[in-house]
Image (cartoon, rainbow, N blue to C red; front, side, top):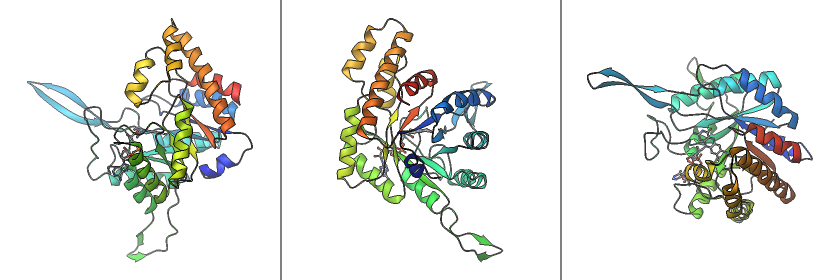
Length: 317
Ligand code: FAD
């Protein structure tokens, strides 16, 4: 079932969880344990992130280095398939421009189609760690919008024995990302919403927000995108504040604000456990307010926050 239908399929506010594939060389058992515990909250689907390759350098001596591309967290497709088969749940792999050529993407899409995994989240992806601005991979894409084009055209121009065959359009449906506090590279909110609208016009059926800690930012954003004629569900992406170091890490990494009240309370915390408890309390309040507002569903970022997400879900489920 498509994500937009899944979130409509319940009277309660639907939940979804986003998880990371395990590090290269490790097994999937730990992930199964995580999903086992999160299933209690009846997630309608599970997202699996994708991570671009990074360059690693091997010192060959004499000032010579060998450069190689390495993916630290491969396996998005495999994890999506494993979870779908084990739990009979819709899985939503993230598909990136970053670190992928068009041919890489074609293979990913082929594998997903064979596996019957047809709900995607389409993203540009983060820039490489060693780069100051985003650089597409080989003949890859600069923006999610272009990647949507390849997904929409999947199946077009198929030939068998030299004869064109009838095609039925793309088997995929997908959502995209959006930013209640604007994407860091956008000169202003107007531009960012302009490109969001293009992504929706190209075929995105919903958008999931970057995490935010001030619900007013989400409410204002939703009003604004509606005014611009964007009428797809805007799914709030939520992550409980987790530890003291996040006071500076969250604004720096995600280019979002922490509200004054949350920051002041966090600064009074003496330990990470106190900060985590505050984060859970704040998140419960956020979720209650979002549910009262009538959000289409809530998407939880669970990375390094599974325990907190469970505590929040227990209260609001
Ligand atoms: P785009 O839509 O391409 O937008 C990037 C910037 O370019 C924006 O400023 C936008 O306004 C502008 N823009 C958009 N289209 C055009 C255009 N055609 N021409 C000119 N400007 C344009 N990253 C990962 O690496 N892996 C993940 O699994 C992952 N999952 C995520 C899940 C969610 C829900 C969210 C919100 C983000 C996720 N990210 C992930 C991070 C995301 O990849 C980054 O925020 C990235 O910098 C932007 O991705 P995007 O798809 O929004 O890009």
